[in-house]
Image (cartoon, rainbow, N blue to C red; front, side, top):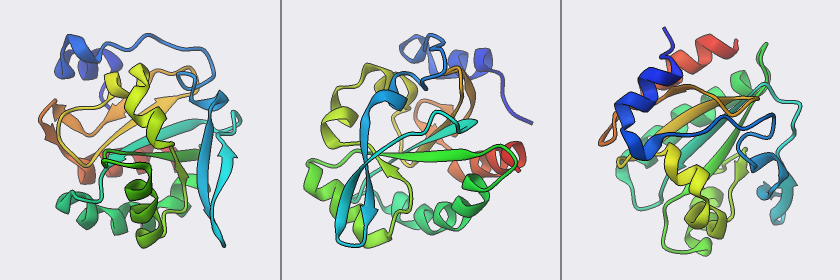
Length: 170
């Protein structure tokens, strides 16, 4: 069962309180992102026609992120092509934009990639994340939290969260 927004925010603490944002996924729909093309990263935008946005937090240096990546990648067609169309945006916690793009390229990420500067400066993105990686937050079109992988700020459970998310969007 999906957790309520109130339960999630209570579990993450006051630092994670996120106001509802109308139909722009917390401003992410208006931002320029990247997507891997045949010859490297290309500019891309989040389509506002999607029903849900899955924000995936990870890093190249994170062993559990590298282990989880194939599972999320295998689930992506079900997310993107499900009954409730879902897009993924990767938010890297690497030290540089180049490291984020290298990791995206090595793993063949098919989804959007938040530019490094956005990942570092966005108050919205930082309020949603817990302290452990990998982590995920599923947002609805109004910016409300549907579910998260963080049971507590320092305890992310991405496999369980992905099962809840797939059940929701299929």
